[in-house]
Amino acid sequence: MAERFVSPNRRRFLKTAFQAGAALMAPRVLSGAVLGKDGAVPPSERIVVGGIGIGNRGGYMMGCFLPQPDVQFVAVCDIRASRRTAVKAMVDQRYGNADCDTYRDFRDLLARPDIDAVLIATGPNWHGTASMYAARAGKDIYCEKPCTKTIAESLILAETMRRTGRVYQAGTQRRNLPHFAFACELARTGRLGKLKALHAQPAGMGTGTSGWAAPAPEPPKEEVDWDLYLGPAAWRPFHPGHLNGFNFEKGGGLVGGGVLEWGSHTVDLCQWAADTDATAPVEYNPPVDGRLVARYADGVELILRDHGWQPLGSCPVRFEGETGWIETGDSGRMMLSSPALLAGREVAEIGGYPATFHVRDFLDCVKTRNQPLCNAEAACYAHIACHAANIAIFLGRTVRFDPVKHEFLGDEEANRLRSEALRAPWRL
Image (cartoon, rainbow, N blue to C red):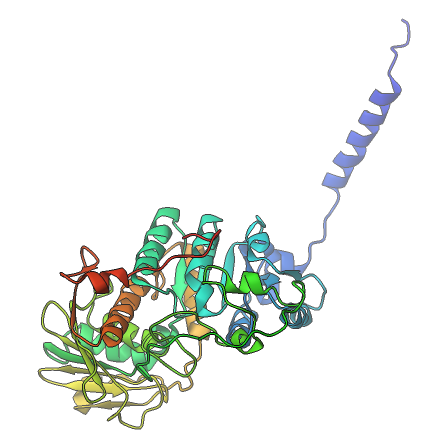
């Protein structure tokens, strides 16, 4: 019989196939990290995270994300080169490599298919818009507060997260601290009797803007991208003082306090305590003697005030019912109308408002697809309450709000303040 001809290409294929099969049969040694041994999280279970706008607050938040065993931080974006360099060094030191990528434009970071979630810690001017872009890019979002600039933006935020199915956690981290959670539980479950009033500290009730500083020489774009920093806000000339805490908006949220800044924390807690995460007060009165009183449809009062608090630390809240009250703050301590309200429970006293628990809630929800405590709807209506209060302050008169139609009743001037134009090409 004639010898069958086997082409060189076929010989090469058979040899390669044999070698591959032998390799598959041979014992393989995998690292403990890949197998998830010794507490390591295998790569398939890790959440790949990128950071957008990592300054002072963002640096703190990075310190909460990086130690989580199931987080892999891979990229950072900032309009400042110095911050990009500093945060990359922070991440690379954590992992013992040089793998953290840097970006000037957040859209380049969002285009990466390997990133699961983003930490947004820009200035307030960018929080809402960047969150919408991230959601549409398929990323889950942890966003610092204040989360929105207007009532309209608050509603679009909630709708965008519902439509895209993204996990969203607002950075109002006190919901995940034991003493605040316990106080809200007492109010929400009727342990204080029928609720009468909820007190929140706004740390100021100003409605100014960041102003228009004298023009200064604009740095090169690679050093500071001023146009991208302005983003959706109205243009104004560069000034280095605007690079820290700049907000561009009327109505609080300014450095040092405001209904939308510190108030977004405390009003959020009041919303949770009143079980009103899907609605907002219907009436807002301008401040009288340092107290702004808003009312829910059922008559419960939301009182914003900076004075008369017990010495329990910053961001205090007080919940009053017909049969009892509780007050607490960032010290971790609580004062109650009766020790019986504790019912034998021991509540951990954690001071200093750490965000680690809040970050963990977010990461767990990224995996389970459940809603975190400060989800987009809760953030939407807490911020609507803050925005409406600011509008009452700005106009200097009572305004009445319909939380179903999302409009002020018979008040054209107030309704015009529900939204604002975005500078091209940015959109929500």
